[in-house]
Image (cartoon, rainbow, N blue to C red; front, side):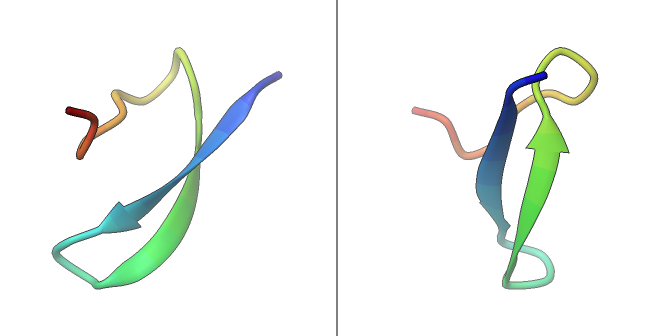
Length: 28
């Protein structure tokens, strides 16, 4: 399973989310 590390603007902390289960926010 491929995971993507994105920075959460709400918390300001990087969080790892599994692709396909969660939408990748902050992706332009």
